[in-house]
Length: 265
Image 1 (tube, rainbow, N blue to C red):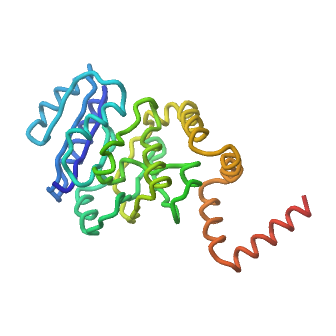
Image 2 (spheres, helix red, strand yellow):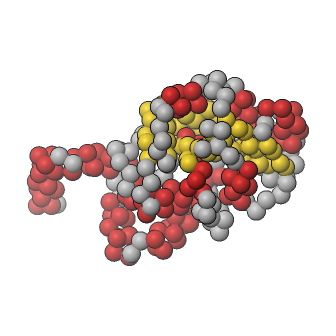
Image 3 (tube, rainbow, N blue to C red):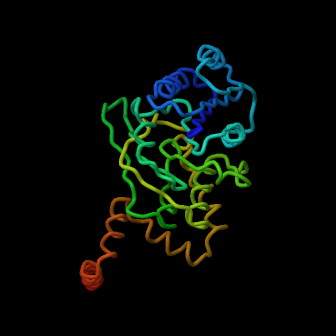
């Protein structure tokens, strides 16, 4: 089995239906589909029964949170790569898996792009991919699990931490890519259409608090202070700074500009 698509759901019946439809309509068929429902009371189990013949494995029972549910899905998966397309999020189109598989890549992480759409404004945009992945990237951002395909072998002995409620996927990416040096391949294709208002978006303050708690454990205080200073830049400016520092002439011009600004202000 090449891919395992894992969907976690709790009381999001219509979002679950949209996700299921986007999975089962994929033109590429070498995948299994696993759904972990946390004992929903809104009729989600009825939706699972309706699509039972299209789902490899599903269960509806209480769990200990989203990462406990995701770990349940991992324990049932047999694919080479895992993708976590949680309820409400959908594959961007029906040939996403076909496009991903065509790259024939063997990287530890294959990462595409997300499409964020705002129903109120009827406007959307695709996510920006960083020029390279460093600790600085994870200090200010993360990779989206909806558009990432992760080798199942990376989870052996290292499941998602369940002592964090909101950021364990971010912790997993940070440790595997920054600390362990696992290989990441970015692809230009849009993989996922995101449902706005996810758990992390609803609880941004707690999300940032959990991240800072982990960062203080992971980084020495002096290093943390340096990253915090750089994080004052917005993401686009930060990526441009990376690009400029890669070229000696641009780096020299940037240094002169900083000196000039320092003298003026």
